[in-house]
Image (tube, rainbow, N blue to C red; front, side, top):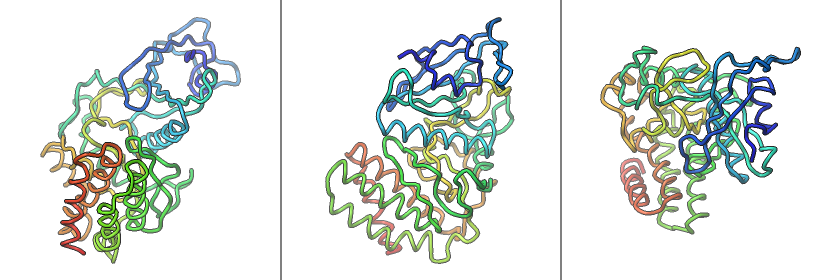
Length: 345
């Protein structure tokens, strides 16, 4: 496939059509091929009178993912919407997506093209430490994301929980149907959905199904409904924020320096504490991060049930990992459900 000359891809880039473009392999992904697109300045590159694109005065790069099949179309559409929802809420927190589509040079293959994020410019990111260049910590940026009111328009439904398109957490296509309450969304679109997905992949499991059904009918209403979480409004969350999906780097073409960044999101407009489930599950966020974040984003009421809510949110990710990988994740999920059912059932 001739990526530099693919008309569907080039039509989404903010470049004149004649700009020289090269594609080289860059990084790695479990679900896609990843590329660095490099646009070089050229004396002959000039915009047409009707175009807002201008030829680059210096070399500029873009990041490209490609993959084949219908799941790739869904995955890239979800990541495109997620990146831009985060970038709209907190500019500079993640690369912005230029778009997604089917490659003209390889029908059946799909692509996503975004800003190029140079993680090598800033090294690894962890804890709550500040980037010298941006002066804003990961905790502060995430707090801004989790306290920014959901925007209106572009398929976003006021005051409801969900997302305009499906997203993927790993290889799992998530149901983001709009729901009136967070308890309904988390129960139906996360727990029941991943239960069904797991059985599609691994076959029926009566023990897991019985535990999930009881968790949905007893624990979810008790912790997330029944007058709890008063005053909570949906905000955009990253959705898959483990330590491997954040770092320190520079987003090319945005005029900024090295700063705390996130990538590979799987967003939803939901309860901000939902984000903390996978962050706690895999760790990698230091005491300084949690202390600063906690000062900026108060725990939802009732505060005394905060830890159990986060464990309930961890459950989804254990079930998702069990659906994808099998193995010991079942035992971890069952352990969480047994404890929560014993306490709240």
